[in-house]
Length: 410
Image (tube, rainbow, N blue to C red; front, side, top):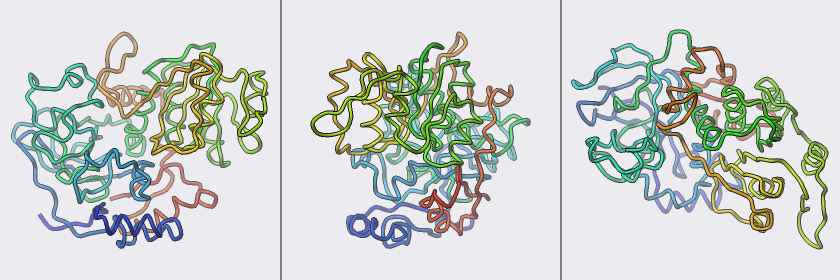
């Protein structure tokens, strides 16, 4: 096959150091080719085995995780789970181009979404040899992400052997393919992967209808967490903090009870819940009272600190945004308030809903096909891959660019 263009991440200590030193002063350097991210001419990845398919990208989403990697914000904790260079792109709708001889149930030309997680099955382990977590359907906890037939990588879009959706085509294992129903648009299908993250977070400990919930952040992850709660039937009172007007509008459209925007977030939460704000001798305010549950969907140090301060005694804090190395987070509230922290990463095949266990992707597609959720309108900016630099510039300027979900369109 002919060579193609791909946006790739290629770590070297020199490139990483240059990006760290100058990226904050001039962010475009981070994707200029001088640091770790660049547009390159690459050969399409070969099929790793008989149970693999080649998929042509229709839309490839630009995720906050991708932006964190490009911006060198991702913790070095994840570095053993990647090999370089890898092609970005794990939010994907595509069309099957080629099938390995052992793939069944799919046809060339068929639209599919890709569950990108590289768990035991894609890595070539026979079912009897799957790790204990994959045996239970908890594929997001797989113990073999550096083992098997593939290079290290948590998912398609961070593994050098699979490629990713920031290129014209890539490869996926048959266990990762989900047929897209005719009634589900390309844009809605592109949102299956982020919605699956929201479903996993919501179903990990589903909220009661009499709870007051605060979702911190109205970016994509905050919005899909809200969408998941409402699509699954939650009648809880849900407060959403939003920075920009377009985010506030999106949150209302998805069923937020109240949107907290501008002004003093702590005072707004106190007014909504009847909490009392107390001023310590030094530092941020202490909340006596607060919400029953917080979903932290930003991944920043400040948002994490706010999340544990704004939950009531005995409350719960769901960590949905991808954190880094936290600085300036006071963990005293966790101890003083006896909070329960519930971390949520990716999704699995054992999401319990309506009396049975689902793959999060299958559940997301079911909810879309049945008309209970349509997120296609969130895809509100498209770029050709050749304009990836402009896309990244725009995504760093939310004040002037009201982008909810940007995609590369092929």
